[in-house]
Length: 265
Image (cartoon, rainbow, N blue to C red; front, side, top):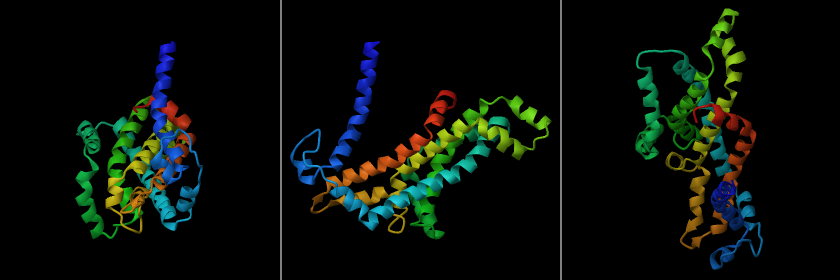
């Protein structure tokens, strides 16, 4: 028992050390970061955070990242829920092959789709907008959401559907009043993964934007310059990027817990 607890503690410490180091670096001046190795800041400073919050470019980059990430979730869920219901409740020609084909989108690296997306969005005047990144991320997040939700929906007995129809429920009314509350945990899990994968995706966001919709990951590259690397700014920006994910986890923590226990995750 003690060995198992020791192993869990060691594992969580291994996971938390990089986060702790990132956060402490954000409160250290650059000369301290470069010159010495310390567990705690010797000279606490908020200059890096002041520089970020006082710069319109940094604020805009955070807003752009949040906007296209939330927009991606809004696009994916209304599409994934009925599609997952169809895979869960109906049998049609090629359904299993189509379901597997959706998963193959997750096997391809985003770099494969850079050139098609780049040319397509230039042609339809979506390049350098949050819509370009949100729609591009849908290529990967939609199959994932369908796969997750199908597992939850298959766990709901079909007799519930049949009973509701016998009671006079139409399909839309049954879906909204009965079925969606039953798979609330699955929706929470799907939304969480869509948000996180879109938030941490860098390659597509950097390629499909230049100035009007620059994400935070692109702007962090500006900390590298000929005069040296501003490690404090990078650490502060990295720390701030952890905040949205932590907030999402806090609000959907109960859904995630039940989702991991019940669904296909």
